[in-house]
Length: 132
Length: 132
Length: 132
Length: 132
Image (cartoon, rainbow over all chains, first blue to last red; front, top):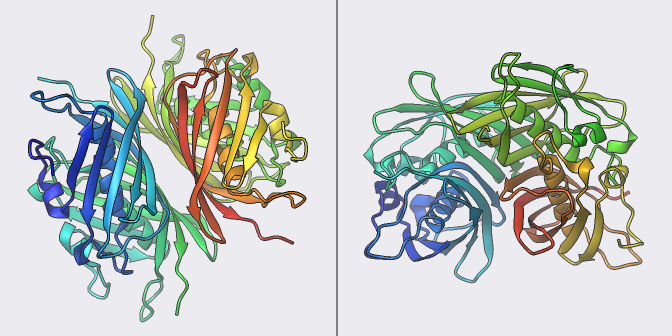
């Protein structure tokens, strides 16, 4: 976990962490446990969407320290569920900012397990928040 | 909460509940608390996506008791974030199955707050699980 | 066709027309012919996406005459293909603006055949163009 | 254009062509002309969605000659519009099959102009057609 990054309460609840953050890219990781499972015994789709939303959002918000990152709100998010994730896996969402400008940005993300197998992919459209 | 419905562990973690379930429709509700908040102070997009995924999935899986519901896996999920949700709200995701057949189904969902204001919308494509 | 509405060249090429346009809603219709068909013998998914993009875009851009409509650019578009369309059908995309503000708007759309059967659904996120 | 590939009528109407096709990937190209333009003077979003749908579909359907490609129908399609395309551009949609199995496949696509600038990205979920 990157010590200088402020995580929100939902990050703590789910247990994911930002593990890499650079200009136009970000990586979020999660050690999957029983609490991430749905009634069918695999990771809930909402967990995967959470990781993609988070990684894509961070990917467009990096600024070099000591500046804090920018803030953005998601406008639209898509996810494709390519292979099920199960408890015991370590899954990683890696996102890249693919374009945009001063107000809007776009990002694409892949979620992989510890062996590099593709679990999910997705894309997000974001709007930067105005700064105080 | 519908007493006869088995919820998974992630439902318990997030705290949502299935409040209505009929042929081709389902409603999932969440009392938003501080633990659903992201680093920007509003409900994490992943919470909203979780509700949409869950409501859409249930919408295609109803069978009259004493049968249990069918099971399905999400293939693709989309979300539009129309207005921010904040702690203290009671938000409700209502989904309808819009089509499909024996193997695939489609559903659309709206998420509203306690005053009926639209928070988000989304759609999901699902595949039924084979039954033992 | 609404006589006072300026259509672009791609509308002419594909052959669709705006058949209703009011505050926060729009309807686009297409008489499906052989030229809309893909290599598998059904209407190309791109035709359906075109109708959804167009209807959603118009839905957020109405202004009462003699004003012209606003202009917008699509940021993100999603489509679910619920049932195939074939030549001879008259299909209609009806979109509603579901939210947004001064810069961004959201719309949802359903595409139906002449008998009201659901062919596709989709959603779009749009940004208004600045006016000269 | 790949001479041995059967294109449908909508491909002819729009004017795109399949320029590369291999196991798990496909490229579709279009020389943008005035007929692809919308009422705002840029390429209609439906044109971009058409290219993404086509390239993603082909990406999952390659079989080495003399076999014909498999056939698939789109279940869900998403597009992000990253930069506008205009008449005179040569745009190329390159798609990769990212996963799936015997019945379903997933693909991701990027659309670039002749200088490699990203115009759009998108993803599709597809179902193989049963063969006679």
